[in-house]
Picture 1 (cartoon, helix red, strand yellow):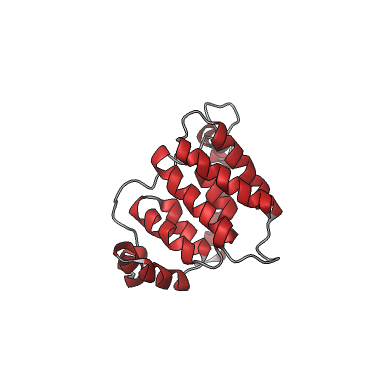
Picture 2: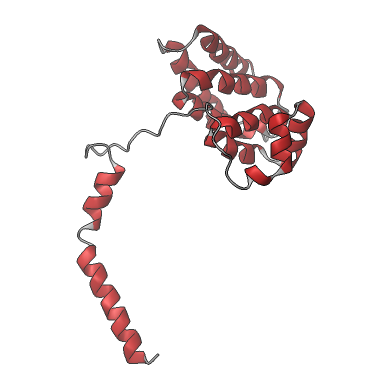
Length: 190
């Protein structure tokens, strides 16, 4: 390709961008805000319900499949091969994959690393998903190995805020309020 053809292509690309650029800011504003008020839309509710097919790579991974239909030994085996962050990625997908990852979390030594993330999910959780999340948080706060590296004052403060909010919500089941209160006490006792 000659230099003049490259220059012509570059000129056409720049011209096209110049024609489209004035339109883009208004498009992105409408998409990224809620009714044009400058506030980003709320994330969708978090749900552990459902049994949708698992996406790759989970669907073909024998460790994940065994953990889903197995027992604590299979989940412990999975936790040895996954970090808490990897389990969090599966938890966030929700459904049966999320349930499997959440049950596996208790075997992950680094589960306190995702404490703040789980608290954030708890704020968005549907009623049936809140209890399992709070149980996982209480378990992590009670039993996870702790040292100076796992101490995270910001995560603790964020979770205390979340637990207080959950205890004040009228639509939260009393058992879930008790779990939130127990988790808050664990943080305060440290």
